[in-house]
Every structure is written in C-alpha cells, then in structure tokens.
Image (cartoon, rainbow, N blue to C red; front, side, top):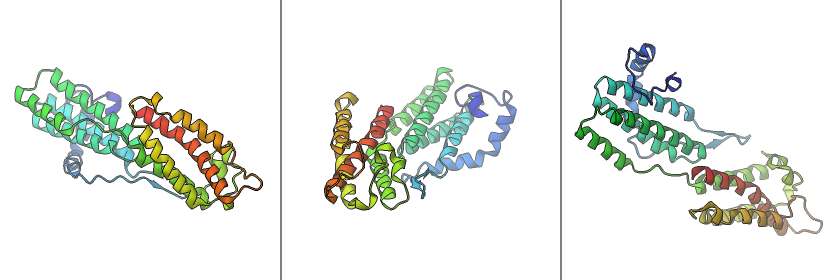
Length: 272
C-alpha cells in the first residue's frame, strides 16, 4: 500500500492516509530496532542452495518493505515537524541500502540500489520543500558523505561460487548435465576428473575478474574469450573416442565456463 501510494517519495500527512499512518504507529517499535541493527558492521546475508540448486535468501524480500516503511514514516514525520525523527529514518534506510547492496548476488545489489534511490527521493522532498534549517541541511550533507557511494557487486564473490557450485552438483549427481543446456546433455560424468575441472574454473575466473576491471565492457575481451572457449571445447560434452581423462576434463571445463561467463557479463553490464 505504501509503495502503491508512493508514500516514500511524496509529502503526506496523517489525515491524507489515516489507515497507513495508524499502521505505521503499530510498527514504530519494529522500525526503531532497525536503527540498532544497521549499526552492526558484520552484515551477514548468506546465499544457501538446496539439493535442487534453488538459491534461498532468508528474509530478503521483507527488506524492501522495511525500506518503504522507513521512508514513508520519514516523510510523515517531516510534514509533522519531527525533523529528528525524519533524520533518523532516512539515515537508517540509507545504511540498510548500503549493507544490502554488499550481498553476494545481483538481487542484493539491485534491491539495495532501489532503496538508495527511494531514500534520495525522500531526502529530496524535505530539502526541496525548504523546511530544513541550515544546520539540518548540514546534518543531511554529513550523513550522505559519511555513507559514501553505493558499492557495486563483486562478481568474484557471486559468480565464482555459483559456477563451482554448479560443477559440484553435476559431479555428485544432484543436477543432471542436460539441465546446463543442450551442449552438456551428452556428458560422461564418470569419465571426468572433477578436481581438475574445479581448478580450471578457478583459473579461468581469475582471468574473468581481471578483465571486468576494465571501465569499458567492450574492451574486456570476454565476448571473444567465450567464443574461443566454445571453439576449443568443440561445443559438445560428448567424449571423443580415445580421448584421455585429462583432455576430456579440460574440454568440459571450457564448455562449462563458456556457458557461464555469459551470465557474468550480463550481470556486470547490469551493474554499470
């Protein structure tokens, strides 16, 4: 309801939306606990995959609701003249956005970036209305400077472990090869040296991470690298007659990386 009404990004008073105002009152204690929670620097939001490979993040989607509620209460407080309450809410919401954006997946970064924009709009409402004193404006400026710029997702965290996790699930039989795509459907799982595949993936990801440090996505060379990996892998996971275990494992690792690097590139492009 708060999102639909845009209450985190518009000025409003309790009489405009009495039901929402009353609901926010019941949430005061819960919202206030967030101020202490975001002050802890050891933020931990694990990505946990089950036996099907589905990734679960506990409580993730509730954080966006929490951010909306904080910003809605902040604008309500500002209109009521409670500048101290307004400052507390926008500071808490912005710290939450920062912490969330540092999670291990693009959904964390995306959610944190959304909440960052919401907080900035909330602050802009108060500043644009001209209701803040010079000292209050200085407090806001200091808060913005202290938090710094929102961080981008480190693909070395999310994608490296995602690809290794995929390889591990295929190796142990939790995931079937054809789930990786048509190119992998003919894989002879028992003929693969999976320890070797894991080491090759690690080495290839080192190169990917280095390439992504380029400020220009077109200059990373990853598109060409994907094409080369696919060419060297033969584009098929079927074991060639007479192919030794090491050669087959190397070729399969290249095929896996060719299929996964595309996802890394898309994620990096979305960040930028």
